[in-house]
Length: 492
Ligand SMILES: Cc1cc2nc3c(=O)[nH]c(=O)nc-3n(C[C@H](O)[C@H](O)[C@H](O)COP(=O)(O)OP(=O)(O)OC[C@H]3O[C@@H](n4cnc5c(N)ncnc54)[C@H](O)[C@@H]3O)c2cc1C
Image 1 (cartoon, rainbow, N blue to C red):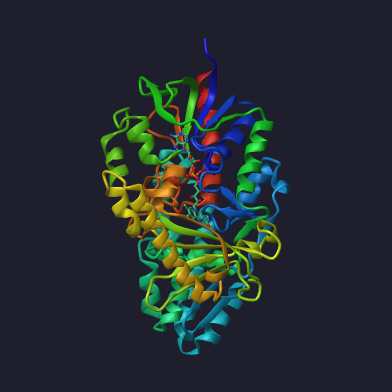
Image 2 (tube, protein in one colour; image 1 turned 180 degrees about the vertical axis):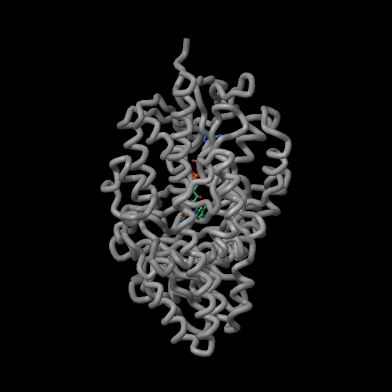
């Protein structure tokens, strides 16, 4: 009879790798199955002509010694295997009127904004007063875990929530951008206050949290590139006797009496397990791997179709032969052209010069990609040549904008690559190339419970936490492992 694993994990994203590490550490026989040729999902890198490009992620928060990512790595004993460089200052905004660099420290950031926009001092004070109250409550809220409460405790927790956390209750559904517009008038100041959250429609609660990240410079870059984090987790998993398969796609989750029993790969191989964790795209998990009819209530499935996805991006990856040290103090900046939407520009070589050949730099340009890419997702048949031309043209238009912010990059390009939402979709299988699971918009903010409606099927990763992102993937990975451990023990 073939082997039955304690757990099979679908996907080697950060959620899957973290879950795998904690299970293997507990002595559970664990198999991770990954459809791509390398681990990491969104947290991966690729090489071209001596340049090391991060495929998606620009910075990771919570990597300082009291951050949750650091603590999880510490629990696994691998925190010293990755050198995190703090990105300080974390935010730089460029507009046609000037260049704004937000210094580290809450008081310093507020003072900088008030000095730069003296007529708006009162509005700035008011914005940060609300922001501070919300953030204080969020720190208190993080110390509780409603998911682990029994029904009565959760009922009581929910009943007194507005009393214990009045600012969160008040601003949870209010759009941060609307609050900004109601408090200040200056166009550049509005842009600065809103861009901290990157996503335009987030709640005031979320915007407040992102400001906390910005003024604490809680953004880190792992030396040797983003792939390093995924590689360290993978090596540790293997050291703990975990097994990992690449280039293998899970086609089905096998269930019996509404209980997960294993998986079937696209080459028809069947592998059995006592429990399954899906780190894969939520819609794919329920509508493809489970056919949409294996035990999940209709309301649950309707929500999966109805809930909006987080935004996807169009990226341009450049290797440039020019010295960029003088053109920016910051590895991440936001540029607002007069006639276009904003773009993000990352220069990771300012954090780690080893990512490029001596004297050269990596420049990554990003813009929201959903509207641009939607027609391609909707096409029944893809004309590959036409798509290639579109991708090239879109990349060139972003390079033109980036060249306004950093004059000279256009004529110094030595390597050029691009990724559209279709590319992100192909490499991660996330629906429409969604970057962070479900939408963070104030009127959405959904997340799936990690215990699925199918017995012994658990979920890990950005579909189970809002906001998605790397810290969420780490946290939900650890929690999925705990849930599996309990489920397996209770069946013995
Ligand atoms: C362009 C972009 C920029 C971002 N920037 C940041 C940032 O700066 N900071 C930050 O914190 N977050 C950022 N994020 C978000 C963050 O990267 C993700 O939220 C996080 O990496 C998600 O991790 P995950 O483990 O949930 O899933 P994923 O990384 O999506 O991993 C899922 C894995 O499952 C595999 N898989 C899927 N289906 C199958 C199957 N059927 N069989 C086998 N394997 C399968 C996929 O190949 C993939 O490896 C960004 C995301 C994108 C796309």
